[in-house]
Image (cartoon, rainbow, N blue to C red; front, side, top):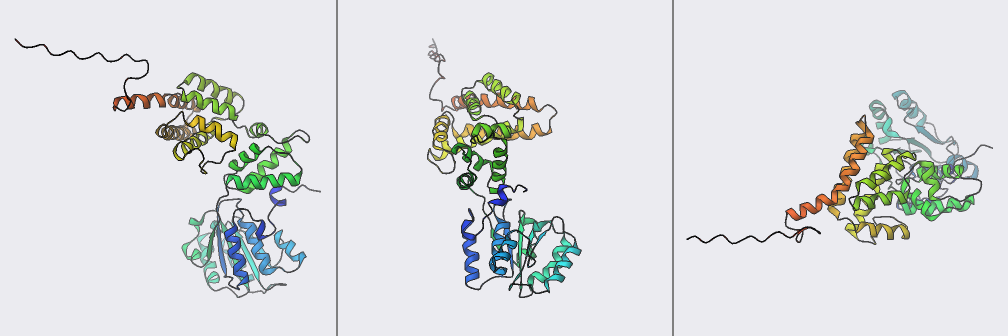
Length: 388
């Protein structure tokens, strides 16, 4: 039997199971209960946040009835719930075929539901063809348009839809769901790993589940999933080595920072991955330094938070802002450079100089509180000679 990926097997089967989009699920449930179902909806959000799943659940509530039909709807195979990928059906002829089929009543239920995924891929001509039908569709038809790029959907189309914006999922929400999935799969996974997966998902549950799939396939036998396995599979810099690099930067030790960078690059980490991981690390330090040790703006395990708080105290916020800007600038330069390694090395040396430059600037502005440590005190000025 063919293997089904985790993202499909653990797709939510009811409004109550949808992770992170409770407000939207509640609104749609109330609309059905109060018989206030609109004729067109626009679901907006990044990939993997539940737009298609929510569309199918809504369609099942409108057009389903029997267990067999409900199962077909959730699998995207029902004749009364038509799913269309606008990326491969974007021409005006496809739009005209859709409109022509709208006139036929549903075979079983009360409603015929059209789910158009990636609707922003439709051509302008296709949008204009749909316009009139979206404004006054047959009473038995409901349109659900899904998109990751709402700004590409014509305003005239958007004005005829009820819009729902799906938010990105938090790392803690994703980690909690992954923990439940691992329990169902009888796979042991460290909490630190699940939290790292939550962050790597970048708000997308599907992306996080896809990485989890890779880790389960990569493990040895029935071994548990660890952070070290994640770093090995994705080629990420080891957390301890990245922390040591930042400590070196805090101490203005460019030599150690360059040596750690070289060891990471020799181990298979790319310059792009190293820079991105460094930016994320510095961002966490900046938030901790600015908002306090217990801020919820940084999602960390208790153990990681303690070490990050200690490291954050080695920097001031202005230096961290400057360091992040340097990394972003270097990343752009490296992508266009024929010698990206040189750009990376120069970036690390400049980062190591940041604190020293900040100290000099403070001294020059009179905010340094006296001479730098170890510097000789300035000689007192002698009084001018008296004139005879």
